[in-house]
Image 1 (cartoon, rainbow, N blue to C red):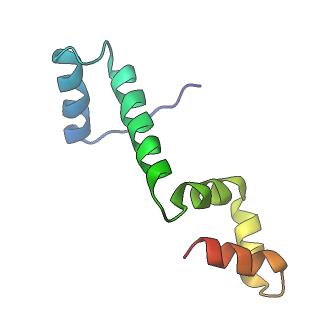
Image 2 (cartoon, one colour; image 1 turned 90 degrees about the horizontal axis):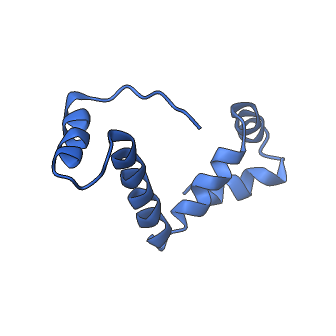
Length: 84
């Protein structure tokens, strides 16, 4: 998958420094490793953050708006509880 990102100067400098130091072969590899490290960190969190992030990512904006608008929807309490 290809994604185009707009980075801050600091982010770009950090990625380039990792390449220059020989830690990684390319900026792309540095970015992938940084993301992988963050995913691993999130998975170690005891509060279920990773599961919550996956739940929200699977819902469209329209789904979230519909659930929030109707407190009668059984998904409302589940979603509300999960995102606390």
